[in-house]
Image 1 (cartoon, rainbow, N blue to C red):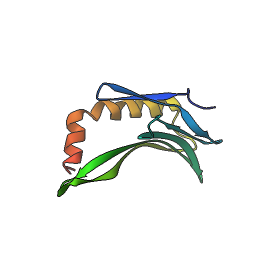
Image 2: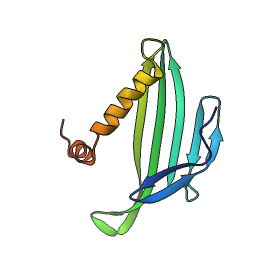
Image 3: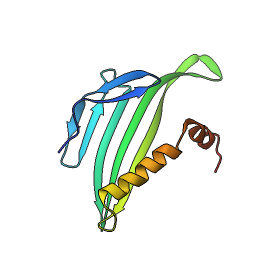
Amino acid sequence: MAFADPQSVTVNAVPISMPRISSESSKSVYASADGLNTMTISHLPSGDRLRSMVRLESLVNAADPFDASKTFQQKLVFYFVVDKPAFGFTPTEIDYRVQALKTWATSAFVLKVLGRET
C-alpha cells in the first residue's frame, strides 16, 4: 500500500507538491515538477529488524563563496529512520517515541546540531 499521491511538504511557508514518480513493492519516490525536491519512502528488512525510512532531498544552485561568478548545484538530504525489532514494540509505542523526538527537536535544537553541538 502506498502513501497518497502527491505528497507535500511545506518549507518556510511554501508548499511543495511531489507526485509519485516511481513505485516498487517496498519503495516509492515522489518528486516536485521542477526536480529540485525528492521524497523517498522505503522499507528494508534486515534479519529480525525492519528499517523504515523517509528521505527528503533538496537541490539548489548556489554561488561559489569564493567566486560569485560560478554556481554549483548543491544537495541537502534529510533522513528520518525507524529501525525496529520484529517484536517488543507496538506501532503505537513506536509512535509515542517518534512524537517525543519531534517535540524535542525544536528549531533551537536543529540550529545547535548544525552548529556541531553534541
